[in-house]
Amino acid sequence: MPVSSIDFLNFAKDSISRNDEIGFRNAVARAYYCAYHHVAPIMVNAPQDSHKDLIGYLINDSWKGNEIFQKFDLIALGHMLNQMKGKRVISDYKLNSVVTESEATIAILSAEKLISKCSDMIKPKVS
Image (tube, rainbow, N blue to C red; front, side, top):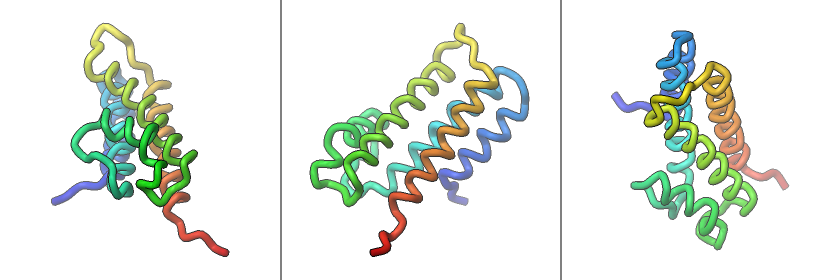
C-alpha cells in the first residue's frame, strides 16, 4: 500500500510520543521526509532523485520561469527544507549530539507550516 507525506508526519508524531531520544530523533527525521515528499511532487521541473538537488533548485533556479509559483514562495520552501535537512542529518548521523523533545516538536511544527504553505501556493487565485 502506498504512503503519503502525511503518513511520515503522523509517524513523526507517534515517534515523539515515545518520550525518549530515539523517538525524538525519528520525529525529526520523519518530519523532514514529510516535508520533502510534500514539496517534490508539486514541482514540475525539479530534480526528483536528490534532496540536495531539490533544495538547490528551489533556492537558485525554480523561480527562473521553471515553475508556476512565486519566487519568494519557492525560495522559502528551499530554505525551510534545507534547515529541516540539517536537523535530520544531526538526528540520523550525529549520535553524540543530543536531540531534544523541543527540537522534535519544532521539526513537526515546521513540517506542518510547510504543508500549509504548499496548500496556500496551490490554491486557485480568486480574481
